Length: 462
Ligand SMILES: Nc1ncnc2c1ncn2[C@@H]1O[C@H](COP(=O)(O)OP(=O)(O)OP(=O)(O)O)[C@@H](O)[C@H]1O
Ligand SMILES: [Mg+2]
Image (cartoon, rainbow, N blue to C red; front, side, top):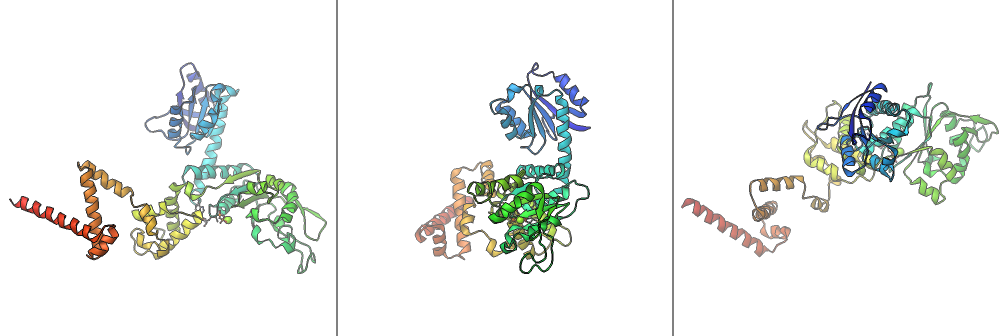
């Protein structure tokens, strides 16, 4: 039995509450009331009106779409005017009206059964495909679902280093075909035009200069398994045309042969190009696109899932530690990792963490000194980010102690002055330059502060 919670945001007469709960139980769901103080796990919310408050609640209980929550409207009219989309955006995993189906409770149960299987598979692969953000979870769920419940061709899109190859390998490993054979990877940037696509089709002996023996190509090798065409956006136009038939019917001829051959494989393609734009601009064939993209999945860039940066970094640290003991990450390093740009996404993060772990010594946390010089933020970037959470905490403490703007401002100025003079080894001229004031202004400040201090001391002694 699957455990779910239920919550009714309906007026009493909108739905027969008792009957609905009974129907859910009959359909095999162990349904109990939502614990509004500590909402957790999967559940069903019933609506008779879609308000902002309802969407907020949905966002909260679904943890922004991470938990599986089914949004059910009391009637179809509730879901008009784009309301179904509002609920999906607020984190619902699916949305429908109770009066739309003959046996709505069975529909609810079917969805939770499928989601339970998908989520169990997702958990089992999260150790290697790290990430808990909504963007990553949504993507991973889609990949897992298409891999294990269909045999569809998949097109993986995404910027460089977002994990397309990992996703392709996952699709192959989750593929439920019995007697599944190998995954064959072909990088389309390495196709040699002179060989007429022999890398794909294979060739007969003497088909072209240098073809001293007959050879199988990628289609034959992938028979019974998966063919992964990496960087498919780089395929030359002539080959795009030749791939049409095999993408549709899985039949092909070796180069230099007239015999049709059959190969049964799942096709997975990847590219970091915007392939639809390439299609619109005539650089990629529309008919080939529609055949390789029975199902598309866009892997999110790392910048769209900052919550995953630290878990990914931890994972890479662990992979690099021979003793299997992880290292903590010092707060300034965490802050640096979170604020940095990653043009090559997860690959960049992995390489950076590797460089830091190589430099690190001792059992303590990774500290800023472990960040190689060339990776350190420029002074401009530091200046941009200087007003960080520790600054805010200090101000909070000052306000809590009853200090006002005047004292806080003066303390900030005095601290900046002290640090600048310290860092310039007491050279007031250089310190004044760094502080952006004249030498004379700095001398006056210091003199007046000394006077105040002297007066305070006199006062104390009196
Ligand atoms: N979610 C993840 N968890 C752990 N490692 C990841 C994850 N995503 C990517 N990586 C790592 O990041 C690197 C890049 O991943 P991958 O090669 O799959 O990206 P890609 O999208 O194919 O990149 P490219 O477009 O440059 O070929 C690999 O070392 C991979 O192990
Ligand atoms: Mg790749």
